[in-house]
Structure formats: structure tokens, C-alpha cells
Image (cartoon, rainbow, N blue to C red):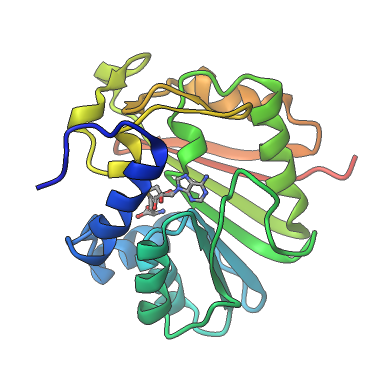
Length: 229
Ligand SMILES: C[S@@+](CC[C@H](N)C(=O)[O-])C[C@H]1O[C@@H](n2cnc3c(N)ncnc32)[C@H](O)[C@@H]1O
């Protein structure tokens, strides 16, 4: 049984490894994710795809089912998540990497034709409208090719917008601890963004162009691209 809250992010991260490895993780089915992706994500015929904060890789698997000709990469801070993703994707440590997506991404600029970011840690904070956060969003967009699309997917319940789901009620152990860095001023739990609080850092980012936005079944679905100006 998971602890309600954790003293430090490191302790929460260790529990997250167990959440993916020993417990069942989020338990999305291949059928579920493939249907959703088919409806909302436009995959190119060929190219490189990054699953940013990929968890156990189930969403990469869904994309691979839809287009096996793309080259898939993923990054997550949890070793337990990445171990699972490598098995699920029949992939290796060059493609599915344990790393901090809020630090320097270990990929060349302009490398990805799709970046898929579903529920990354960065979006869980209440105030993304801060310079250090915007800088990370800009760095992420630098990894896109000129034709590349960046998909930001984030769940927010309308009745809860502007508030947190408290730490002891969130599923992911990593969110059961506050985390404070320059880019993340995160109290723990899960923040429910309204459209403005979610979109503002993307509006403010220098190299980001908004392509489309929709709110579908309690999910923000934002598509952006790199703006070379
Ligand atoms: C809500 S889960 C989403 C996982 C997956 N994208 C999905 O939709 O099933 C958030 C994931 O982000 C990862 N994460 C949080 N902060 C991170 C960071 N700074 N760098 C890399 N991964 C991070 C967590 O380990 C977790 O797997």
C-alpha cells in the first residue's frame, strides 16, 4: 500500500519506480490509447517521435501500433517507468532514457517530428507563468523539426479548475511530495488548469506558435510548433 505523502521528492521517486514496476501503473489498455491517439494525433509517415515523460510507454506503444515506421524515443525520470517502456517498445537505452525532462534533454535540436507530452510533471504546478518554466517550454520546442508538432495533453476537471487535488488523493507517488526548483513551484498533488493558466506560458514563449487547442473529455489538448520567426 503506497504511503499517503512523501517527505522528499527522492523518496516519492523511489515509490514511483515501484508504482510502475511492482504495481500496475496507470493501466491504460492498448485499445484505449490507440483509439484516442488515432482521433487526436497526426503522425507523419516517417520521422522521429519523442514521448516526453513517457511513463511505462503505453502511449508510445499506441503510436507504434498506428505507425510502426516511425522511430520512437521516450524520457522519464522514473527508472521503473523506463524499464517497462523498454520492454513494451522492444527498445533500448538509446531510445528510452532515464532523465529529467526539466533539465537539458539528451537529444539534438530539430530532431523530432512529433513530441507527445501527456501529463508531464511540469504541468502539475499552479503557476506555469514564470520565466524559468517558459524557458523549459522553449527548450522543448527547440527539439522540434520545422514540420514538427508538439502535443501537450493535460487532464483538468472543470469543477476543480484553479484548485489542487491534494497529495494524498493523486495516483502517482511522485506527485505526493512538494517539489520546488526554479522551473517548478509545485506544492504536490495535481493542479487543475483552466484554459488561461494552461496556455499562458505557451503564448509567452518566444519560439512557440499555437496550432490548435481543444478541451476534450476533461483534457486540455494543445498543439504547438516551433516558431522560427
Ligand atoms: C501523469 S504521469 C504520465 C505518464 C504518461 N505520459 C501517461 O500519460 O501515461 C507523469 C510522468 O512524468 C514523469 N515525470 C515527472 N516529472 C518528470 C521530469 N522532471 N522529468 C521526466 N519525467 C518526469 C513521472 O515519472 C511520470 O511517469
